[in-house]
Amino acid sequence: MHQSDPGPGPEYAFTDSLDGLPDGVIDFHAHIDEAHHLGWIDPPSKLLPLLDEARIAVAAVMTYRDASLQDPSPARYVADAVAAHPDRFVGFARIFPGPGTHAADLLERCVLEWGMIGLKLHPVTNLQAPADPANVRITHRAAELGVPVLFHCGDEPNCTPHAIAALARLVPEATIILGHAGGYRHVDDALDVVRECPNLMIDTSAMPYPGRIADFVGAIGPERVIFGSDGPGAPPRLEVRKVLYAGLRDDALELVLRDNAKRLIEIARSAR
Image (cartoon, rainbow, N blue to C red):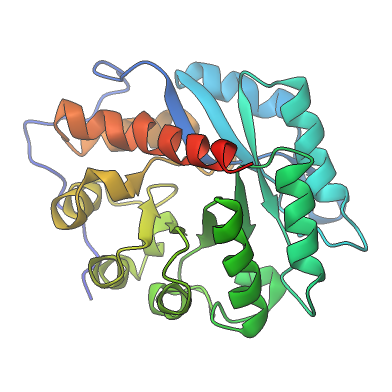
């Protein structure tokens, strides 16, 4: 499996410059939460200066915790942050997907009442394989509501690209995003499955190989590659620089850094 990244070539010497960054960048994978028991204290006031430093206009924000009907407070936290900063944030609902139909009911509330534009599923915390019936059920509902489904996709059990692709085949009408593009050790697998499944996209967040961003764009087109930072854990300015370092054409750069996210946000809002 390919593990190294040669980069786009010596003519792209790395600097901290943001020259060439388009206006209106949208970060489609960022975090806010105050999970004291986990030691993750990342309120909006921590993320916003990092977005400013990176010249990111809008961020899609989500919690580190799963919401449920029994405890919807993580989703409410995001909804309140979006209401307080409507020009800077859009919200993803991170939801525990089972059992029963209650998770889909909570997603509907998050989208229709609280204005969320996406669903986040994290198999490390919910301990369910992506193709588990509970995930299939809530992903179907996300597709009906017009919102994308963002998965943590990396090296842990149940999070690999092939595991998530199994769900993508079961729900072909859903837009499913491989967050982190396979992480450290499964980037080649991510490239394989996005070639096969047209309803899969990748996000660039915290994937450490800038040259692989160009590989994805070359393989599936820039319309299915979307910028995310995973901030504040990963520095948003560095994550933006990583995309610039990939050496994409201006039209592709605008799609990856802004227009793809803008399209998904507009689809979600028009479906309500």
